[in-house]
Length: 358
Image (tube, rainbow, N blue to C red):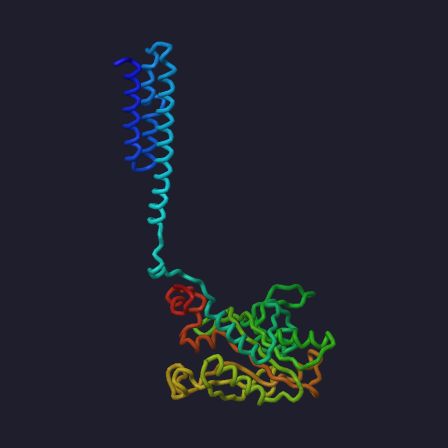
């Protein structure tokens, strides 16, 4: 066999062997290794081409065409095999990453509002549905709005340092304090109405944070109140009782029996403590209501004429009612929470029970 025929046979054997190897490659990495093994600088095709230099010059162009054809065939076969393997690997990856939508989904934790904020929103919404407008005011107040305008005398215990958080002030400055109730919003709303040239009727609900120096199972130095008041001609105690009855029944989601007991508040006259039939024993008597069948929930009354006078409203023409309720107090009754401090301790067990944490 001549030298050129021997080279052609080697190239044909190499091509057949390479094409078979390309078809058996299991992945792109294996195919890349075969590309280097056959077409690399130190590959098998290069080894065969070393014999071309031994041929006569006249025969080299002939074998050169055969070499080029072999190289082209191998390159095309490699590209074709690479495309097929790429498609195959993509399909395998899709199958491996496929999500079975028939399986039940993984549960994920979702944050919700704190139980106090939930209660505050529920209460505000009930009053809004009754036609009361929502109003807010500053938490840092002065003595006029927090005490004087509400007919609270200078010697009243509520002004004492042990009950109110006061800020340091010079003799020239009016004392500033953290508001002890949301009633200052009542004063600001009525005063703004008069100063802007308006006049009653006014029906307002004022939710917000308040502060007092107190801390035990039923008191916190920071808590939430909702102040509700209405001023108009011929407003009576009957209107007050009707609003209270509707609100408390709506909030506790059942018909609630209420009673008003005479009491004293500087800013209302007459004044009344409001009791509800115990929501735990339906008035039969239990540990929560101490066997009485009744639970005290809030203070109320008809707005004192001195309060109306302090904001420029004629008490001979207009009258009004007002009441304030502790948000935490009602949330505790609705959900059977024994200790107010649980609202602020972030105990995971309590939060899970209240639906705040999974």
